[in-house]
Amino acid sequence: MERIASFTVDHNKLQPGLYLSRRDGDVVTFDLRFKRPNTGDLLTNAEMHSAEHLIATLLRNSREKDAVVYFGPMGCQTGFYFLFDGSRLSLEGAVELLKEIFAAAGEFRGEMPGKSAKECGNYINLNVETGRAVCRFYANLIADWTAERLSYD
Image (cartoon, rainbow, N blue to C red; front, side, top):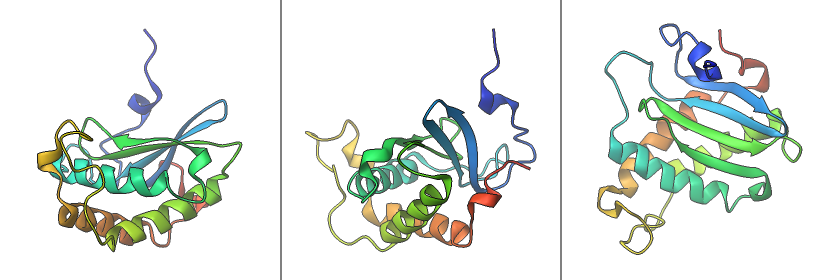
């Protein structure tokens, strides 16, 4: 059986940041790493879920919404994946979009998007303040990130 691409990255060396994980045709996958792997410091379910609702909503309502394929959490609880159409959005454009979206999510005002039993399968663990805090942290982390810094070390 072939090893998947993400298993070829040395997670013992991986630091929080923004990385180009892979390209599959026009689909580009970014690794949005919030936590250093294998340290025991993980995103809680509420942090992941709340940030996911904010970011996915803002991405799908952004000027680049037609390029967005997917945004969601990693099972290891250390970050998220962002998949986008590389024929519609450049690496540089994607980095800038994420900076803008995370900054906006960090300042989000209003009700948590999708926070009802009708809209979400686990709506009770959504918290807008928690989501804002996680997004502010990551916005600060990637504020000076560029496309030239996307490669894993």
